[in-house]
Image (cartoon, rainbow, N blue to C red; front, side, top):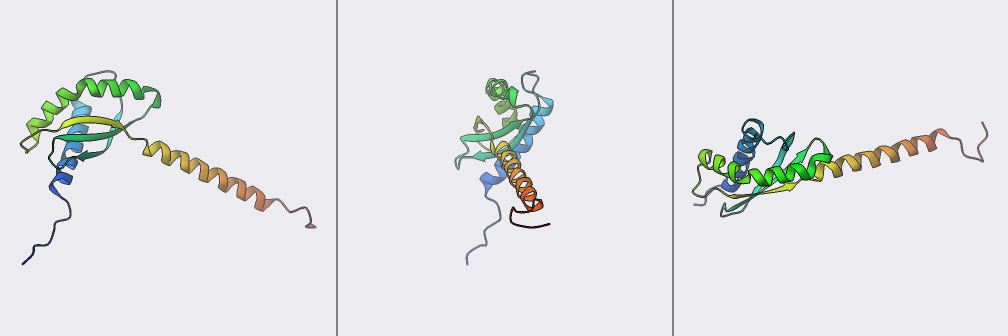
Length: 132
C-alpha cells in the first residue's frame, strides 16, 4: 500500500530551518557594521544539501553592494554556526543572492497606481462633444 506524501520535503524543511537560523544569526551574531538591516526572504537548498541560495533584501538600496560583500565575507562564520544547529550530515555552502522581487513589486504597484490615477482623471473630465 502506498503512503500519502507529506506536505513538505525534507529539503524544504531544511531550507526553512536555515532561513530561521540565519535570520537569528544576522540579528544577534554578525558584528560586521556593513551588514545593516538584512531580511532573509527565502532559501533554496539543493537535493544533496551541498549548496544553499540565500535570498535577501536590505532596507536601503544604497547599501546593497556593501551588504553583499559583508555577507560573502561572513559566509564561513555563518556556515559554521549553522552546522552547530542543523541536524544534517553536511552543512551547505552559502550563496547570497539579492532578492529583487520586492523592488519589482513596488515598481508594479507604482505603475498600477499611476494608470489608475490617469484613468480617474479622464473619467472626471467631460469629453469635447458633451454639453454640461
